[in-house]
Image 1 (spheres, rainbow, N blue to C red):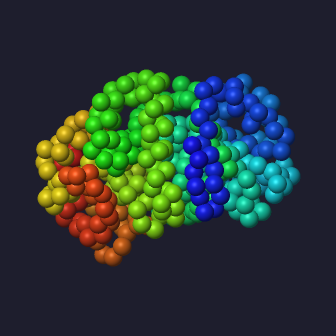
Image 2 (image 1 turned 90 degrees about the vertical axis):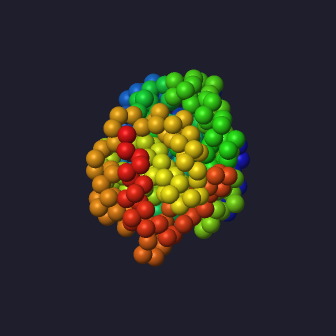
Length: 349
């Protein structure tokens, strides 16, 4: 799958067996940044990497900051990495964000390759070229656009992915299928149980379909100035929920709750019928909302305090992506706090 970009075109290569990655993992001119957990779980795969060219990253939200980028740059300098060398990033979205930004600023930009190892990264974040870092309590306020040279998607990495992290990826897949239209909703509704059960064929098909949906948006609006904003469906409240709960719930789960909140707002505005909202909630949201939602996630004062920090916020009110009954999506910058509070009461389980 080829992705057009004003920065540089790149390609997503689908790999059936992790052993096919060995040529990428045994290059003396590469520098490797690998999620520490992934390294331990797949140690034989990385046996030919020179330790001097290896940086193990503890991939957690608290590490997604500029300090981690500096540590990688120090590793690049220590290993004598030149501008002509390539950085190879192996891990999930946090690893991608940190390494992508490091690659973009080291010698004003060096080549990099990405091997996503989570379902969320394989189905969504691996394309689009965004890098995003946190600063203090502010989420994703530092970043740029710097796509990799190539992306290698290998399903073998998903075998060792914890189920909760797998479901986080399913949440983003649901989002992408919904924004593709009513047909996408019907398709994900049919396949959700098999997808959640990790059916290999359904997972592979869902990853490819998700990337093809996202590809249309990022090629049309690479730098997020218009239509690409639709991809933020569920993310306004989702990001706030992640922060408000101290990341007790996964990104995908937070996005599912965020989509449910957005649909409740749409329903209350008369844009979305109660029947359609209920159908979506019952068929694809509730199966992914495992257990009770943390109390702090639905506390209006707590949530609004983080919503005010949303970088997409325009004016005094809040910005949400909302859908209508025809599965058409648009950004609304006039969502009131009272609307959010009303919607919160409708998403509790």
